[in-house]
Amino acid sequence: RLILGIESSCDETGVGIVRLGPDGALELLADEVASSVEEHARFGGVVPEVASRAHLEAMTPTMRRAVERAGVALSDVHAIAVTAGPGLAGALLVGVSAAKAYAAALDKPLYGVNHLAGHVAADTLEHGPLPERCVALLVSGGHSQLLLVEGGLAGRITEIGSTVDDAAGEAYDKVARLLDLPYPGGPPIDRLAKQGDGCAIAFPRGLTGPRDAKYDFSFSGLKTSVARWVERCERAGEEVPLADVAASFQEAVADVLTAKAVRACRDLGVGTMVISGGVAANSRLSGLAAERCAEAGVELRVPRPRLCTDNGAMIAALGAHLVAAGAKPSPLDLSTTPGLPVGTVQLR
Ligand code: ATP
Ligand code: MG
Ligand code: FE
Image: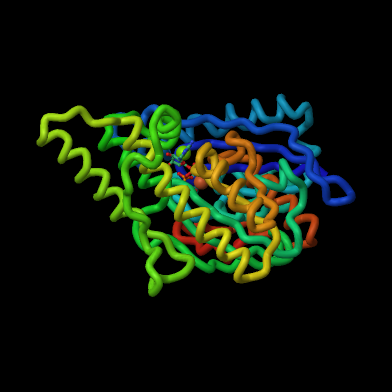
């Protein structure tokens, strides 16, 4: 059975096609993404109106490319999955409207799904179905959460921790701005950090005191601390050691995220950790997670970078898990939910 996935929650228009085998195995047939990121770069963040308009322009061509790449006919599609939230209201609306139109025209069932659960589902395209229980560290541009996933992606997702201020990706984007690096900030900081020393500057690790919430994160103090450091250099007329600042910032983020995620696995007796979302593409985060998971005897799963950032294939994958589990489709008058909580995997 072929499952089509449509993603438009932020600045990527994505269409993915996945084949769901009789044994529940997924085969990725197409993963086409059109991004408006360059149009937002000069604003240093996503401009909602610009994103919506770009989705409108990109949706049909991206759909066409995906169908062509997969070498299938639209009429052979078994079901259509679409991101219903969370995300930008106007951006979501473009994808959901397109999905409804395709579902109605082709007379196929529609599944309105959760973007964040989709990020976790991306990993199943690479590493197969999830075990009965796993901890997922979801780190993206708008979210940073620790999740307990039980019974697979069509099962139950419980948030056990989250950021109390900025998301990890947001911190990357803000720090990149402080260092005069381009938007989005994750990739350039990641590259620069490789030439620096992560131990050069002891930036603060938020919420790691004995009385702090065990699984929550905070990145705004870290960002302020980087800003103070850069200011101090400038006041003293010293050159900012960009690579060391990038590496030390990156170390602080990776340290806290991996320490808390491994702790959650230990406390909950879970043997598998999935890291997903755009920041999962970070080389130090996956490197440090690999070390710490090995020490703790936890299996680590991180999808390849292309599947970490927004795409339609992850939405198709999540739709496939729902279909495989026999979930009922969403109604055709499904609405978008910009603030959809992560525990609601499907809108009904
Ligand atoms: P959300 O999923 O929360 O709605 P989003 O969809 O905008 O937000 P993603 O596309 O999943 O977020 O991720 C984008 C974020 O990932 C950006 O903040 C970007 O800086 C960050 N990012 C991408 N690559 C890297 C990297 N190599 N290292 C660190 N961060 C990265
Ligand atoms: Mg994006
Ligand atoms: Fe995302």
